[in-house]
Length: 199
Image (cartoon, rainbow, N blue to C red; front, top):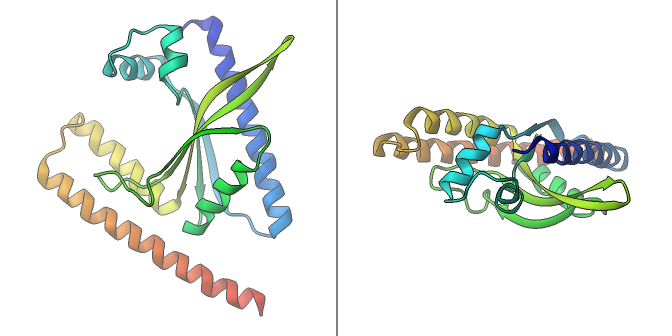
C-alpha cells in the first residue's frame, strides 16, 4: 500500500475506536450494564491485503484497495451474551458518526464451517484539512463463545490452507452447534439473572 494513503486508515481506526468507546460508555451509563467484554482493533497487513486482492483477481494498487477491500480497518467487539450482540449493533446504528453500508448476520445464517458473528461494513468520516473523507471499515460483533470458535476456525483453516478434509469439516460443524447451544443456554441464564436483579 502507498504509505501516503495509509494515514487515512490510521485516522479511521482512531476515529472508530473513540466513537465506539463513547457509545459503549454511554450505553453503560444509560442502562447500568456493561455488555462488552473487550474490543480489539487492527489494520490489515500489506501481505494480507495483497493476498485478498489477488484472490479476487485484482492488482495490488491503492485504488483497488480502496474499492475492493472493506476490512483494512477491523474492529472486533466481544460481548457477554447473545442478546448483547444485537444491543451493540443497534447502538452502532444510532451513531451519527458511523454510517452502516452493509450488514451480514452470520448468527442467523452461519457459514458452512459453523462460523457465527455479526458483521458491519461501515463508513467512517475522517476530517482532513478543508474536507471530510469517508473510509470503509469492518466491525465484527460476537459473543465470547463465538470468539473462541472463530479463533479455532481461523487456525484450522490456516493449517489446511483452506482445503479442509471432509471429516474435519464435519466435526467443525458439529462442534459449532455445541457453541450455539452454549450461547443459547447462557442467554437463558442471563434472563434468569435479570429477573433476580429486578426483584
